[in-house]
Length: 109
Image (cartoon, rainbow, N blue to C red):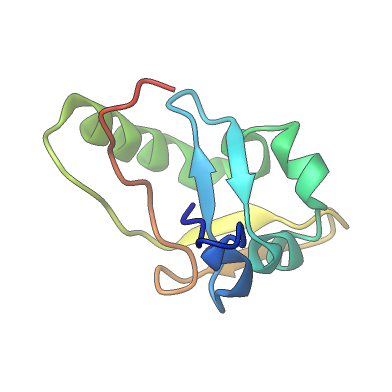
């Protein structure tokens, strides 16, 4: 996530859910809006993976997109996602404009 000269993460002020995710799915960094969407604190999200909170019907397609991203066949992807809210009583649909997909970097994490 972008860090300004004074050390503030610009993603902290974004009106969209954002996360930096390792290739295996572990959250490395999340912004407050994503935490609010899914009902988990930043610390709780950093202790888990996107797979654990992704709707089971969406997971396989999401993992296929990640594999294409990591293989270099695409630079990014967007898709609608459903995440399990911490209350576990409902699935939250997250439209692609609210949660941007992974971007491939050269860093292996």
